[in-house]
Image (cartoon, rainbow, N blue to C red; front, side, top):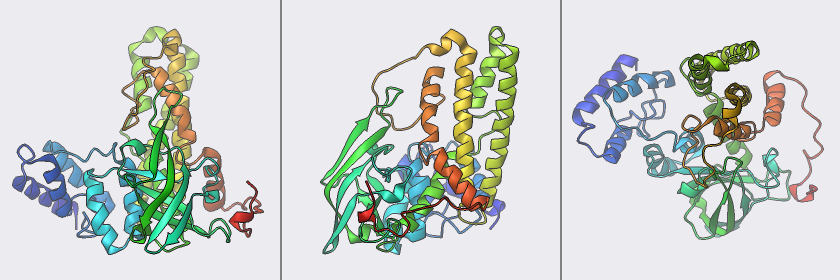
Length: 392
């Protein structure tokens, strides 16, 4: 399989499915069935077992033809986290049931991982799942759940055995967000919006057929999700001067009256960092074509978070008094985070969450130290202690 083969297939598909006359959802379903969705996935599951690097050859043909996409920003958690985890650990029946509506965007996904007492230390989570015949009964609370208010499904990690050490007693499920007992409440953020939520689970019944992976192996499954999450957040490849650096550079060029030598030095430094991160992201994407994501994604995510915060702070300083203004505090529950569609004040405030969401920078630095640099692990006194005996 090469780029020419895939390009030919895409053009033949377009000849048979005119985007101008074909219903959007029918078009996306047919594209999935033709193996032209995520081409590195197996045949029959939206792909052709082709190298991931060839995805751009397919996407460019559809983009040039004005074909509809699956609104990847809206369904990013499904595409970047749920799908690779379901593919890696799911049964054939789960592949068949979930992957196509996930890719087409018919079903939106969220992530039920963090809890009020288990954020950075996810393995300390306490949401309980108890077996009851062919079902599991789940009770607990999750927090910082992006897009839960628009989601039909969730990837969920629970505690199924409190009598073993915390990493050993977890089990992973696919949770129907419309099931009785699931309650979603908005969390209003510093920006005035509530893209995050807290989710309460009260005796929610989940069929065992929606368990992902073996009982007690939830931590292993969750690691796949988390590594893909960090790549999805930090490894997105922008064009040169794409994203926030482009916004700040545009202001610099168009507003010479705002310039100072000190701000110029800082802008140049941020520009170099943005270009370095862009090239590193390209390299990381190339590495992914050879296998699953590794701990390198943690480094990308840390760098992405720090650069975003530095750039938004620089933009506010560059604008002076204008940077202190805030365009709109109206309470909203948006489907996506839009850094480019709002003013500098919004970007500055929203970027504060970058070093928390998707793994705090402090925890990710530990991962880098231990798994990339090979430094000794931090002392852990809870490693062999049953979860129920841990202080809380």
